[in-house]
Length: 326
Picture 1 (cartoon, rainbow, N blue to C red):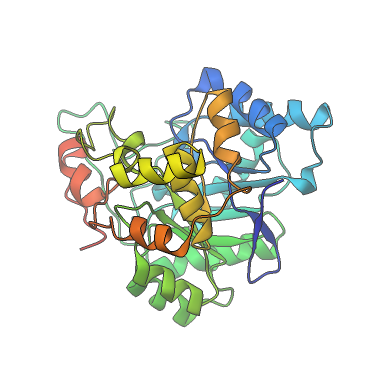
Picture 2: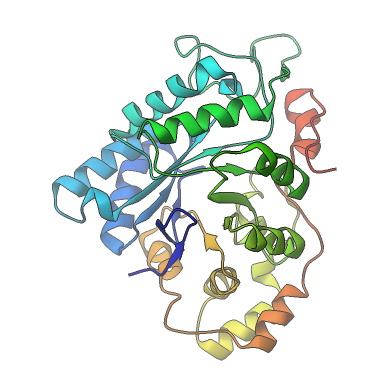
């Protein structure tokens, strides 16, 4: 079984999860079933991934077959950018719950600190980034909705029992500090991009001080971004000679070394794979340990390289400049 992080709420978050981003809909149910049979007890989902119905089918099949109980499974989902207004937050989580076939979520996250114009469910779901993808020049339509308004509704979801824990994604220290100034229920988890090329040491230190657990998405770095044109050849940390040497020393794969580095830093990781062998490998990182020197050497690869940045992809993909990190 995987190790866990204890949240400020007392909940136990499994440190290795199966990421559902970019898992094709026609494979999602099978991948989820395979992951749960392999031993995963943490599934990272989102409205925007477009596969929650299929993920729910996989969960239901595994639970019905006794792979595990619902209370042994951790399911995360996320509030999309178009649902930040107070009147849209609860309908959004109810839609995710219905698609996933669940009575509650273990964790619900604000996906981005970006509020976009509302798209009705019956018009398009998931709503994606552009308000009108068929427009001559489709673009993101930003709206002025304070994070405070959205967070109050997230707190209401927790009070209503629809979600057990709440948190945020893609927030920096300044946004977290602001959120903490008014939150009645502080965020239990921050999910951000984390890998050796983007170590984010200051952000992790701040979160430790504030008792905010951290989950790193894209823990293998560039691998998820080549097909999207968001990473170039030579930007994969798995191809680093140092990582290869450490992997050989421990008789492990480079991916296992990077995932071990992530959990040994005290964060959770959510690698994505649709291959049974990779799913097994990604979970098999608890019977070896990196030395302090190896941990430091991997951390020294940091180059501040962020692959998932709306400030970079917003204009070429959606005709909208939308920086959130600069």
